[in-house]
Length: 66
Image (cartoon, rainbow, N blue to C red; front, side, top):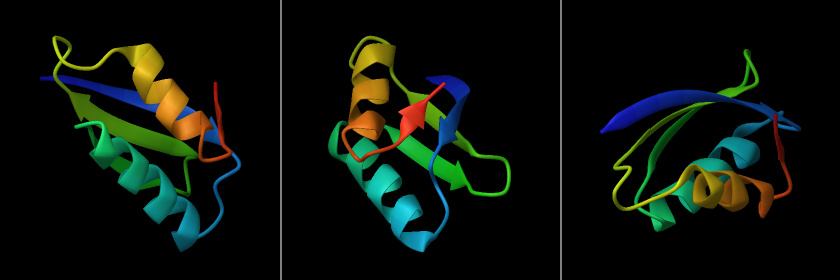
């Protein structure tokens, strides 16, 4: 498993947390949103999911991955 932290803009509330964590879960990724630091801690298996897929899942929810 690989663990990374992504900076994400546009998150402000529990709905944001649920949207992002839910979208990541759908593609087999564990995500933990930190609203105070505008970040998402992500754990994933590199042989199953790419960084592009993770970024796309977050961006499809309306947030910007930096």
